[in-house]
Image 1: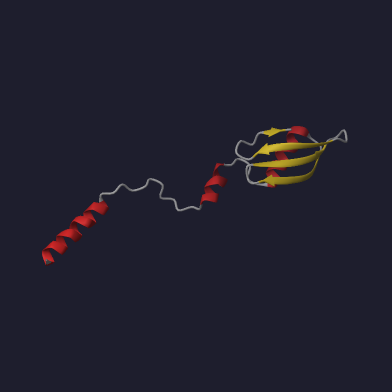
Image 2 (image 1 turned 90 degrees about the vertical axis):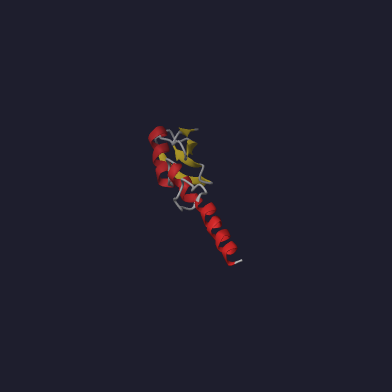
Length: 94
């Protein structure tokens, strides 16, 4: 009985050791991985990108769940426009 128990323990340990190991050994939380994939990481950066494209004065920036930013601009001609900045690509559009 003693030898059977030792044999079972030996084979169990070897079976577990033979299992494949995951390649991703970084134990970073999920939200940090998402931030690393984004090109635009802050409201300030989104405001700068929108201002560079359309000019004028930044009136406000709204974060849209980390996927995009809505930037409210007052143009040099006195018009208010809203620019959308994609957080993953950095692309700015109206």
